[in-house]
Length: 261
Image (cartoon, rainbow, N blue to C red; front, top):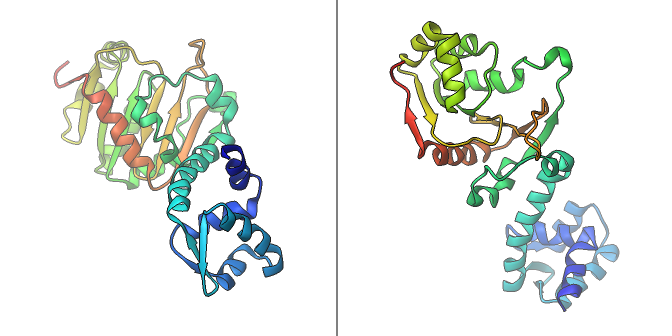
């Protein structure tokens, strides 16, 4: 029976779309036909299969999900969102270290929504992603958890401060030591600004950086063998900020404020 039900759900695009359309409530047949851009003759056999498997019911040519249908579609939607997220960059996700993501956030990875893999040219390796940074300058806050020192980080931080953007920054101990040693005066001036909230993480950080604002998230991961990779993910969606803040707060719990260097 389980195999038959999986076939019902995933071997027909029309059946899958019908269930997804009905997630928000019952619909008349004519509305379904218009949304699916199909004919009654083509759709009725698929509708019958859904009815025979107790996933939908109908009354006077209006169709809706059954209790079983509602139970399944909630889980199916999450699965489809995860598949959509991973599908375009599965080689990157599969060949990079993900264990640094707390389990409860890994289960919510679909909240990163649409991600595209960015492959910088050699001449662009240390250039900031313009799409992401311009969004940060228009946001209320910019968050980053990082082990990576961008060559222009002083200028980038000052640009955000000039735009009155709150900067929430967590670095590894090694990175903090490097910033203090090589950029002491500039870094001290930055962290003394009331818009900057700087912390140092006390444990190992097995990734390059995770940055986000209200519209975008950027994830730069290490290969599973620990090697650096210049490629990174740029994700966009309404839920990336919530996922990002929860990620930031997980690392904040084991971090100490940086107030005096």
